[in-house]
Length: 241
Length: 322
Image (cartoon, rainbow over all chains, first blue to last red; front, side, top):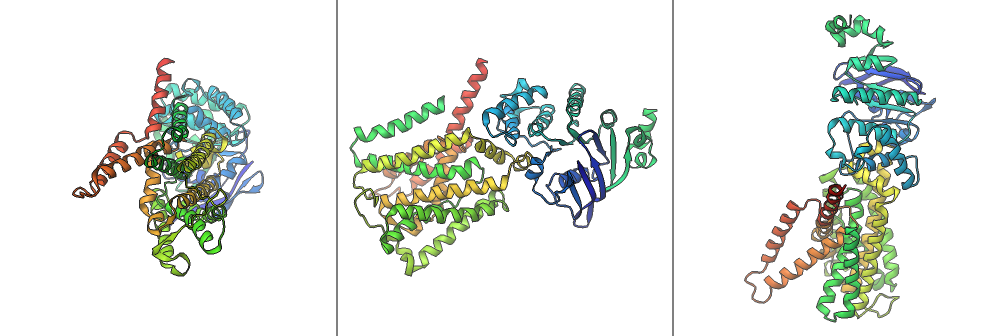
């Protein structure tokens, strides 16, 4: 459904993303890993329409969406979340989710029902009336997912929605993502928490200095010498063994 | 509920006042409260609901005032036509300003709007052949509804009341509409709104253009009421600040906020001016100092505005009960 064709993005002299090609379908969970500054978030910005690549194309259902405004890409079924969460701070949790739902729904009443349903799915019904800017970080991350989910995406781009969560929140988030996957929503996940990534992703793409240095099943990635060298380090391999 | 009660009391009292009070000074104050409240409500569409704080809305107000005055004096047209022409011109100007809002954020946008209103001031005050320049234009008084000429203050109270009420109801409706919620998303976080499929740029431009058109309508009415258009007044930064301050003090992005703000500011200004200036004159200007100090205190302690504060308290009560 999503295909990147040799995408490159430069900022001045820095090439943040270089010649990256990848595909993702609603049937799978794709993980993107790499050290800080590897270009993961830049790649998300390019895919979701927040940045225009300097070279290469982004295809959605075979259609070239390179340079299309972000809101139109979301309407086409690809919605992203933000690593630095961006809640509608003064609005309630339910209103936050409802604004996402209004992208597909014409009536406020229908969107409110949909928001309640999504809030329940994400385990947020107890916080429906809470102002978003008073939520702790774990719930803000969950709101970020809930709001994106309310746009009924076929493909969700999740930018570090698991970092900063405590172990209980982490397993809830993993369970939620598993449910979304079972519902047929494709997930592209940026994450630093390798344990979570190994459990969740069916395929992992490794970026380093903007380049894709490896791609494959989690077990393969964990053994790949290039990946160990660039990102995981020896300790990870020893701990895993 | 509290917000509704506030609106019922405000508009009810404003409608009933002319039946009871005949004092011209009082009615004039009431007309100004409604007029500035309506203008501030028009500003609120862009500055409050869409979060695009403009400090140049006097540009649109002046466009409305000049459109009617020029059409009446130069082409002998009805001020209603002037109102329409002003609204169309202001919409076009609003589209330009709206486009700027997509390039400039926050204080940069506000500065650009100030510059825009000052360009119009220079144009209006220097183009002597067409606008009569800095002398301004006396608006001809022609009695009758078709020419917006009323000697009765009561008629003006109801005219401005109808305008104020229409704007209040429109904003009330906006708050619970699909567009209103999406606009709230744009105001709270543009990137997040865009990511959720909201055409943020288009919505902002539309809100600013509509705000401009409505501000222009207020300008036309004001010119007809006062009977004189002075470029240094209608295009002034003071006036732009007045529109925004009423909304900020009353409650940004609330339907009732601009009217509460206008009530507070217009009353305060009138009262202080009457008390501290005048013939004796030793304290001329002191009212501005007091006025400014009170505004600082209000903004410091009620940053969410009066209506915003009431709404927050109401929410608090609901939680306490739940």
